Length: 339
Image (cartoon, rainbow, N blue to C red; front, side, top):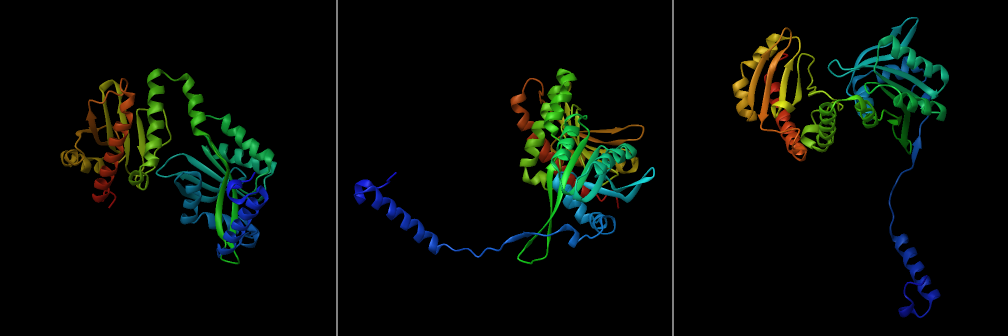
């Protein structure tokens, strides 16, 4: 269709003029770009166990995998025994979370390795399974998808293609391409069918919390939210196995909070309790110390938060919790509790 018939007199002339303009523009716009090339995995890691597993077990590489699947991973051991077999990598979520099995296969997926990941998960009581492969065949992708759809909300199966890329002969760069992963939202909806009204409301609150937490640069740069649950708390790990933080929702008492929690070390808990008043002033919150049989710590509350009747204020409640958690984290780390 002619765009300028009234100016150029005929459709053919106007279209020709437009073509010349496009050619002229394209002739002067040049970019100095390289060609990206895929590098064979075996050229860098000839042997899965001796080369790739060893490489992946290094902290920075395990962290890179963790970033790809949105989990903080800590190595327990490589070549971990499971009966007469050995799992490539046995790990856990940071600070004692779920157990994780990582199985490496730098070739096409096959039934043998599919069986292995299930066997290893059962043998190690792992709740997270990561299958790293050279190429994911469609039947095995569907199998992982099916496992995610038909296991409980605490289980997660990841299918990850390992890739190496180079630009015109440059040093190869690794990339973890996540092919299949758990649909946590779908699992939480399915699980919530048997929940009480209060549990469903808490689940919805924590789902909204996750959305806002990842959108908050200051918070998300130092802490990662726990997956949504029906509990009245949501744990936050801050780099120590001796203590952590948690966000709290006390619906029946109309208050929300942020908690410092030392599960097994009362000496650490006592040090924070001694500074409860100081921290309460910093956080502009009510401090409530607690000492249980093993655990101890301090809860910092914001009162007057009607969780049940005012869902339109949830964003405000969550914003306060995010800001308060960041402040408390900074104060706690400055105390050097593990030192």
